[in-house]
Length: 125
Image (cartoon, rainbow, N blue to C red; front, top):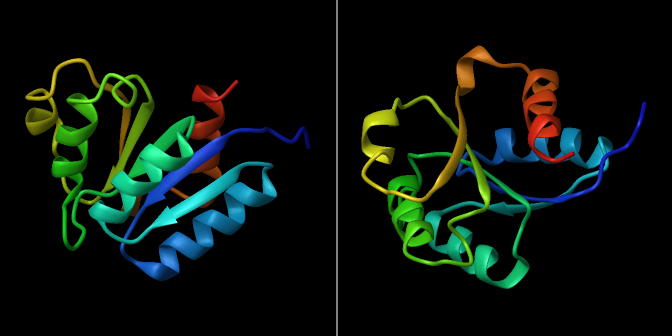
C-alpha cells in the first residue's frame, strides 16, 4: 500500500478511539498529534501547524465549537482542512464561523477506521 505523509491533529477525548485511530493513521504513514481536550488542541494547532484536523465536538475544558471559533479568528489556522468527527450534528453551528475549511462531517458511529483513513487521504494528497 502506498504510504501517505502529512501531519494530523486528532482532537478526541475518548482515549480508546484516539489510540485506535492514531495507530491506523500512523500505519498509513501520517504523523498524528492527539489532543484530549479543546485547550490542548489549540496549543498543538499553534505549535505543530498540522495539515488537517480531525475534530470531536464534545470535549472537556473547551469543546470543538470553541476550537472552531478560535481557528476561524486566526488567519494561520482557518485554512487548515477540518473533518468534524463526532456523534453531534453541528453543521448549522459551524456556519457561524466564516472562512473555515470544514471539509466533512462524519458521525463516529457510521464510519470504520478504514473509511476515516480514506476520507483523510482525499484531503491530504
